[in-house]
Amino acid sequence: MADASARWSRYWDRQAGGYDRGMAAWDRKLFGDSRAWACGQASGEVLEVAVGTGLNLPHYPDDVTLTGIDLSDGMLELARARAGDGVTLRQADAHALPFDDASFDTVVCTLGLCAIPDPGVAIGEMVRVLRPGGRLILVDHVASTSRLARAAQWLLERVTVPLAGEHFLRRPLPMVQERGLEVERCERFKAGVVERLVARKS
Image 1: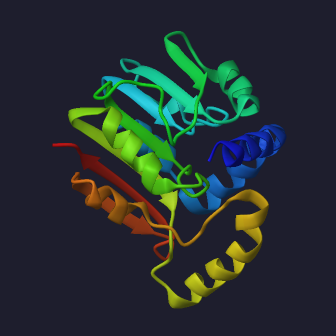
Image 2: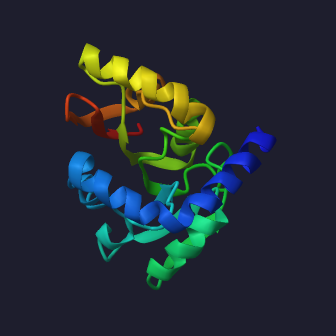
């Protein structure tokens, strides 16, 4: 896992400079208001996993205490330029979060689980660091509800998985349910390709 993490850290370092430009088009065409949707529901002490270049940072309420982690130092360098006072950013692996159990009131991950090598381990870590009653907020592209779209996603993965570690046929929801969280809200759109959910830890 360490070798894989190092490989993807280098990959995302190389992608950092063009990431915002590429994501702007996807946000307009596919994800819509999902960043504001996710961040606007965060409260208390918040952890964002896979914070990237910090595109979510302007969308958080002013009264949260925010920590963001990412595997890529190149991404984090750009995120620091966006971060205001009171935002802590650090390099870390989503598979082994460097925080004690029950450290956060909210954990947010948008468009990250599609590229994290083991999403089940990462979700387990997110749940571990959540306090009882805390909320996990996820947004990602997932396996479509359309058979034709799923076939296209399967074809895309033949290129994107080896090249960029990018998966299109994952779905975090069952992994969240397997870990005992209560799903409070779940919605899908764009032929079911985009799914966003809020789940609470008991």
